Image 1 (cartoon, rainbow, N blue to C red):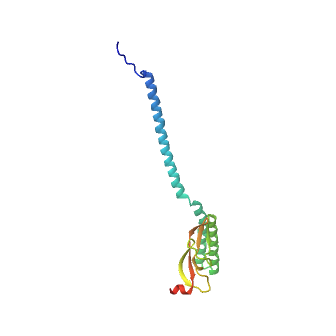
Image 2 (spheres, rainbow, N blue to C red):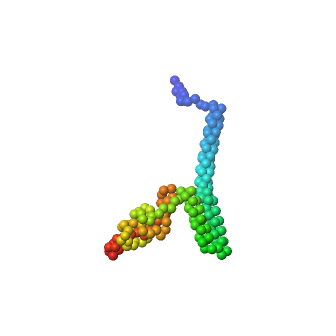
Image 3 (spheres, one colour):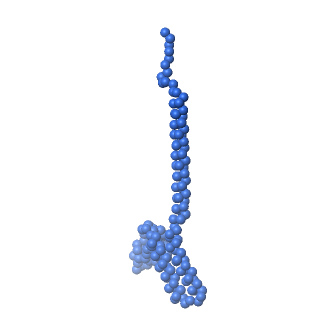
Length: 169
């Protein structure tokens, strides 16, 4: 009795091995192409993000250019010896135009005058004794505050009323 060992799997033919190698190479090639495509897509997305950030304010700036042109005209008129009343009217027109452009982009001014002091919307720069004003009420606005789509873009700089005995303490 001779001990013959039979292999667990039959030996592959050369033709089968060649087919498997080709399939492996094709799969490897598809994998490498997919990885390269993913890398290219990431780079393209990064470039697009950078481009978007660089030009995100383009429409706002384009809207502001006519306002700048009107400032140039107002200054030229003032240099030409135009009356102060005409210059003032021109600057007021420019201010309204600029506020309209800002409002178009979600920026709106708000008034703090007469309002209770709110640290979310106001920044107190001074306290003054005002017996006729309610305590912690804004009695003067030194710089207007602005909202961007309802959120504080810049708080108003304000003067707040305090009772007479608080200032001495």
